[in-house]
Length: 364
Ligand code: PLP
Ligand code: COI
Image 1 (cartoon, rainbow, N blue to C red):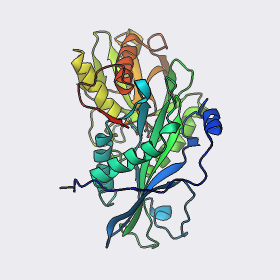
Image 2: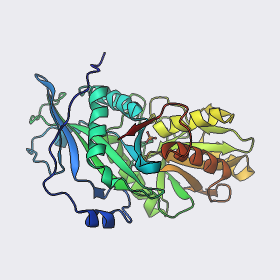
Image 3: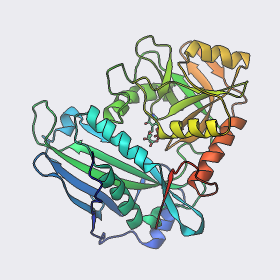
């Protein structure tokens, strides 16, 4: 059992906060992951002392010895979640406990220490309170929180490190895909993201490193994002580099690939499944092949497809291209069911709809 005592992150206010005027300018069009706040949460771990020295402090560069083991063997994991503005100046976290659980599932896979759930949650609450002025109040805006942990032991032997740093950064963000009504996908035939027994279910930096060459291939082929197939048969659709995927059918049902060990257990994915069931929509978690996808898109059986994640929310997929050709989906703009589920989810996150599943934690 994890200790439920709430750890204290000592607050050391930044001596060089961005002024209100400068921050207002930075929040006009923040994009994604470029505008960072004044503070960060930080905690140290050693095998002898456990987690200690927990602080909210000025965001600043780190100094690392070149022999720091993460730089060599990539023992690193991260999370992504958002704080949203709500009516009457309030703000809230969405399903942060689910991120805490997934962080620890990733930690176990990467032979890293658990971060007690109470510590994970408190680091986020304390950082959001310190930097609440950085939560944009635009419709698409939010404060994106990036907890991460990495091995800091200076040692070149290949073994789990005995020392780690845990940090949470916050970034004021707008839409991940700006402006486009839908995105185009590139199906990579050459590269796999994850294999059975590998790290596909873990949110570790290495998964993203291996996806970059395929993402670059997508861009070279005029597409926005890469979609990965399974590594064994190379035909079952898995997920995008940083998003899960859903399919919508002409009988009003929706489907998404099952969590069979190689794809991330997306919290947006899980929320969509829950909201769809609430709405009486038939949902299936089942394998779907690229051949079937193409056939269904062409016959009209498949009417919509969308990508989903914390950063991307729900984003329509308008076309799919591979070395063998290209097919379009629906009207290539956001479809009615995608739109309906998106609105429901966003309304819960932003306090415009009730929260029947206890997903919201308001902070003050
Ligand atoms: N799949 C991958 C590989 C991701 O990086 C993400 C983003 O976190 C997701 C799916 C969606 O997960 P979530 O909805 O929890 O953000
Ligand atoms: C997220 O949605 O939180 C992610 O981690 C995806 C990343 C590609 C920005």
